[in-house]
Amino acid sequence: MRNSCTALVIVAVFLAIAGAPPVTADDATNPEATFKAFRAYFTKKFPKLALNDFVNGPYSMDADLRKQWQQIEELPPYDFAIERGKDMFAAAFKNGKSYGDCFPDKGIGIRQNYPYFDEKSGEVITLELALNRCREANGEALFSYVKDEMASLTAYMAFTSRGKPFDIKVPNDPRALAAFRNGERYFYTRRGQLNFSCASCHVQNPGNHIRTEVLAPALGILNAMPIYRSEWNSMGTISRRFVTCNSQTRGVPLEPQDEEFRDVEYFLSYMANGLPISGPAARP
Amino acid sequence: MRAFFVAASLIVIAAAMPARAAGSKADVDAALKAAQDAENAAGALKNRWIPTEQALAAAKKAASAGDFDTAVKEANRAEALARASIVQAKEQETAWKALVIH
Amino acid sequence: MRSGRFAAGVVGVLLCAGSFLSNGVSAHAQAPAPPGQALAFDRAKGNCLTCHDIKGGDSPGNVGPPLGDMKARFPDRSELAAIVFDETKRNPESVMPPFGRNLIMTRDEIEAVVDFLYTR
Image 1: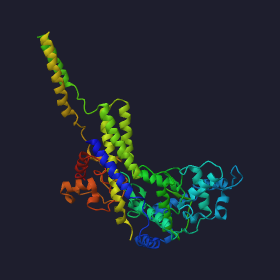
Image 2 (image 1 turned 180 degrees about the vertical axis):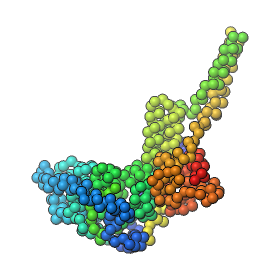
Image 3 (image 1 turned 30 degrees about the horizontal axis):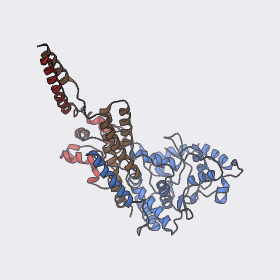
Image 4 (image 1 turned 135 degrees about the horizontal axis):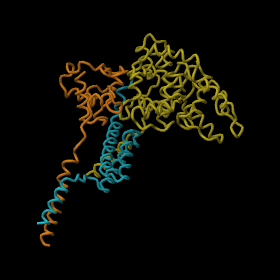
């Protein structure tokens, strides 16, 4: 009885998988229209908030927190990460090349262009992925996406782009549109035993608090990355934050830089086009 | 007469003994397999839950310790959780669209 | 000798019967559910304070409405239990976790939480 029941579940799931690949672009995929609607939702919800202030997350939502933040910024806790990142970035690989050789403009002042859709390989390339691909291409071991080395490198690169507006492109290529749409799908999909989507907190409840933690709006939520989070007593990359968010729904996290994670980063970054890079930044 | 009293004592002892529930090794193996199969299916949908993994681990630990009753109980719980996560993933294939900002 | 073997046979049958009988009783015995307040405030169970202000709790969140005057607001106990079990049935956009449907709490635990809420 139990075995045939299980077999039915397996067959049903197999059929489900066979019929349900990651979302492809459909007639509904219109990044510009999506952008406009997303932007209007948040500016209407917070009419007194200056547009650029959205990148400050919880500090834009709560005056008391903002005061604490201003005090923290007198001695920024992420300064050490910028310094370390600068040294790492300048140091040569064993083969004599360095990070600058992998990136346009020697990797300086380019963070706002990531992620981008690579039409040659047909995939979304995030900054973290590009850094590790650079290491790999030059015979160096990969860094963990969730630890300090990657945080330091991305902190430095964000720092060189501070103030520059996000400039993410979704080319009129069905694969790019599919990646964008997949990121949007991931963002709104409920997951984990607690049944939360990203939108549950960051679209439906920005400015509200869960216990004492103030929820950030989804608009501009990646502009401050990587962050020094007081709760972690350490830096956190985009990968680290996504993995933690998964766990907070009581879902087993995807692997860092999983296609879903890259696509949702692509979607969220495009939604923030025009908003300034503020990273690296402090958070509670 | 003596045999009668021996029999009576044995009956009393037997009635006082706790029950052996469904936990035979074969039952444990079947329950674990059902749970793992369901969890693998949830994994294929990229929607595994943390409590499912915890229940599975508890079931395996109980099984190797010979505590078959607990092993079956935990494996059944893991299977129920895995099935719930599959239901969620399947519903969400379409349900997400209703929450998109318009 | 014959009576001994007979007695052993009877004992054997009764042992089997005994084990079947006790099977029915103790396999379904459960520890009593902890009091509702403990469940409501336990982060692994109801974790209600994360989103709701409830008298007796500290540092509540405000994602959901404060939970007071519950007997007056929810005179139908089954309605309140259904909300805890799966609020998305009533409101598909709700961010409240479906504590029953997703097996976060058992039905007994949900009933205990409802008992507690009726005291708030």
